[in-house]
Amino acid sequence: MGLFDKFKKKETNGWENAYKANPQFYAKDDGNPFGAFALAEDTETILLKDPRLAVDGKEITDYKLMLVSTTKDGVIGDVDYFEALSKLDQFKLDENENEILIKALALEELEGLIGKSSLQIAFEENLKYISSDEKDADVINRQFQKSETRYFLTVGTIDCPTGEIMIGDPLAYMPRFSPILEDTIQAGSYPIEVAICRSEELGIRMAAVRLKITENKATRYQLAKPTEESAAFKASDGVACGFPVEAGMLSICDVQVANEYDAFLQKWHQENEHKNHYDDYFAQLFKESEERLPQYQREGGDFIEWENPDTHHRLVMVASGFGDGFYQFYWGYDNNDERCELIIPLINPDLFGV
Image (cartoon, rainbow, N blue to C red; front, side, top):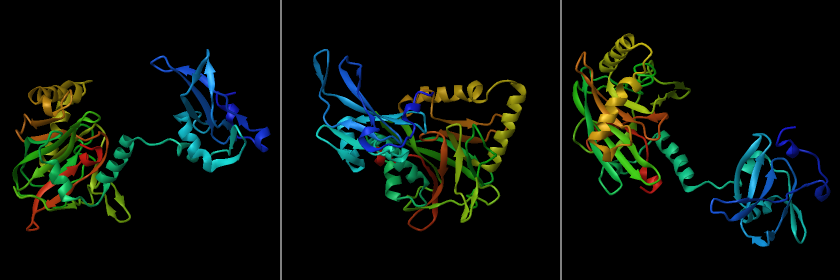
């Protein structure tokens, strides 16, 4: 019998056959005791309304309700006992002076008792932010304004001999699985700017990456469409205007430069068998970048400008916000409705109070 088999669903007849939760007592890190009751999935349960119990003559006032899932075969969380009782009132089958009988809860109902932290809510909202079709220009522009918690700087220059733009993860995919934008820019060299946010909870994070085409300010943003052949995936309503990240890094670069980069990597691996191009090559470059600008990067470095030693064309690599995921790209348009920048939003600092 598994550890949680005693909670497997069974037919009950109310009070008589319901599981009666009895507390177990534990010590917190500070040595103070607390009591814990168990509430399991698919099990009618009897809980005390107001536990007033003592251990070694000392009354216990701190209680938790441990939430046990038989589907997941384990404890999925814990909540304050008295707060949980208030939420459980909607699931009450019966009660007497001292106890309450709770109906058998489905997994979804059990999970609903776990309150989300403000940070969890912010992360969920940020996922919506980076995947939305529209972007508020004011939100983006404020990320590129300096404050106590926000910074921005030019982290390098990219060379665009063709003006065809590719976006992808340079450590995992590029040039494969990296969309090529339908619209091109004039051949030349362009600065890559990064908006950076910092807080006690988040640490230092790259919040947005943009390629500046002109010095004009963007007043609106529109999803940048990739070519159908290069799109990360296709849906019934068109191609995806984004790219996957698996190694926590992104790059905006010219298609020719991306192919030259791929040729360099293939050559490097032939000359360095059984070695890893990040650990044994790029990691040192990121470390040197961090040493030059430690106030803007996490330990190990978050951005580099890299020059191909064979072609001398440059590309820039930047850490992708909260790491792996799927990120979208947008053209920024100025007051004359001309394209002035290409941007990849990663984090909305407003959501995290930064």
